[in-house]
Amino acid sequence: MDDCGYNPLARILIPVQKNRNALILTTLIIIAFALCVATFISHALTKPLKSLVRLMKRVQHGNLDVWQHSKYNDEIGMLGSHFNRMIIRVKDLLQEVSLTEKRKQKADMRALQNQINPHFIYNTLESIRMLAESNDDLRVAKLTYLLGLQMRYSIVRSEEAVTIRQELDHVRNYYHLLQIRFPDKFSLHIDVPEKFLHLPVIKLVF
View 1 (cartoon, helix red, strand yellow):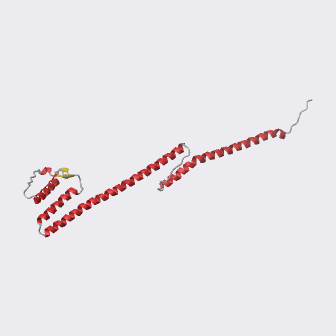
View 2 (spheres, helix red, strand yellow; view 1 turned 90 degrees about the vertical axis):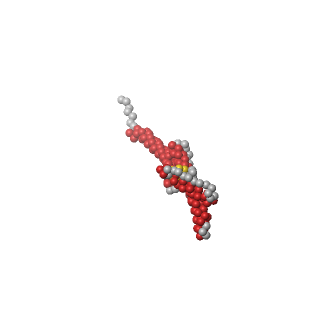
View 3 (cartoon, one colour; view 1 turned 60 degrees about the vertical axis):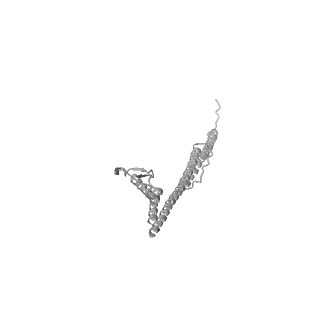
């Protein structure tokens, strides 16, 4: 009769329990390491995005002195580069608008000055005319009156095209000036059909 050995079940399960515990511990370590790696990667990805969002909010409130510093040349880095170029373009456009507005203000000021100067001359001529009339110097009064009409027509900025009637009136006024200065030296004859008087011509063409 053969001898049968007897081993308790607990002794047989000891290596299995050790292997199980080692496997559980290894699994927990791997999971913890994976969580750490995932957290690090998530932080590395979201940090530049959060920074870009903060910069966009500052731009939204009117602060253009911002710049996105990208460490990597990935998709997020390219997004930051596009954001920086957009800020540069916006600054350039604002500067162009500012320069255009300054030029417009200068042009408006020059236009106002150009309007003031002729009016000053007209008022001066009118004062001379009134003084001449008060002294019964009708010749000087007529001369200053016609000169004022000539200057008003020539200097005042208006549309480039005038009617033939307006242009002929200007010619007649000039002829009257010559008549006062050189009596009986010139004669003027204008023969233009009535149907043509309303047609447009370039100012001072005659």
